[in-house]
Image: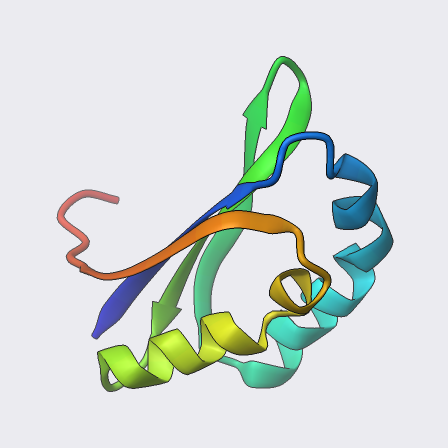
Length: 89
């Protein structure tokens, strides 16, 4: 099943994102369940994340989101995890 993890950064926390980016990318690689991912961009600056996970259930997706180094660093203002269905692409 696919799950979308939609994260919005706290305003003014771009440096937190930049400082934690390597750990976040390593987490993506080591967990092996990320189907696709990338930052949201507003006015040319990263301001959030969309991560699509392929996992068995919502609890696993929520656990992945809870373990993200960005979350541990306090980057996010909000995080939503919801089942997602791919239709096109």
